[in-house]
Every structure is written in structure tokens, then in C-alpha cells.
Amino acid sequence: MDGLAVDALIADGSVVDRLADDGPDETVGVVTADGPDPEEMYPVGPEVEVELRPQRRLRIWQLAPIVGLSAVGSLMFAFPLAFDFGDSGAVIAMLGLLICSCAAGWGMMAARRVGYTWPGLPPRGSGRRPDWRVVLGYLLLVALVVVLAVWRVARLR
Image 1: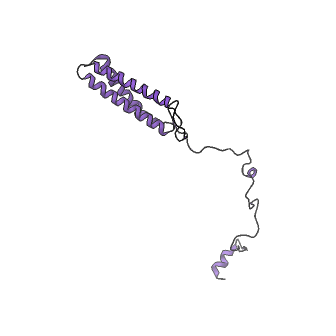
Image 2: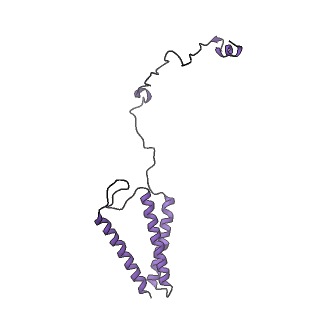
Image 3: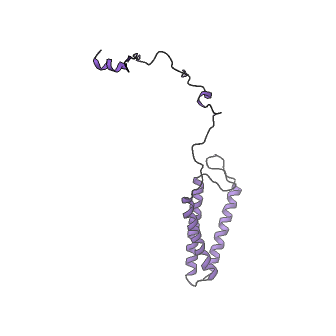
């Protein structure tokens, strides 16, 4: 053996046994081929599983622009209709309705992205088909709101 190998075998003045190529021949301590028992790993109590992914919910940075745009759009829609600002009232009201509708669509897409669904509709990825009566009810409700809004703005002229 060369001098460096002999120096590596001596620790604190005693000779250390060389390891075989595949490791020590005997097991040391409580390590077994299977590993320690669960009681040895968790001596305080039973093992507890914790969900590592955060809950899916809308955050404040997602909600703030949606709420702000819908408030501005609602005010732009409501004030010309309530106080009749003259010839430009219909244009401002339609612009407010457009902004408010865009904010509502943005909010629905953000809610769908985190897993929320409309009442009566199946959750995303469940494989179930939505009931046609529920979908028809939502379509009629949206159509009614649009007809009433356009009718009111048309009456300003």
C-alpha cells in the first residue's frame, strides 16, 4: 500500500478496518433490511397525513380587478339610466353594460379555473353531462337581463 492509503486507514492512532466493496458485512444499530418500524420513526403517536397542495380558492389579487371593473361598469350603466344625462347617456350606459359583462365573464372564468361551478351544473372533470333544464334556465335568465338592459337604453333615445 502507498503512504496515503495507510494514512487514511489510521484515525486517532488506531487502525480502522477497511470496508468491503459493497459495504459492511454486519448491520449496525436498529437498521434492518426493511427499515425501522413506524413506531420507531414516529414515537409520539400515529402517523398523520397532511395535504401538501393548497386549497383551490380565489385570491385577493384575482378578485380585486373583477370587483373593481364590475363596480365601475355598474355605475356607468346605472347613472345615465337613473339621471338621464342627455344624448350621450345611452352610449355611456351601453359602455358600462359592456364593462360590467366583461367583468362578470372574467369572474366566471377565474372561478371555473379554481374549480367552482354554477349551482346545478356538474363539477369540472367529473364526466357527467349538465342537465339541459338547468342550462336552459341560465340561458333564459341571461337573455332576460340583456333584453331588459337594451330596452331601457333604447328608451333613453
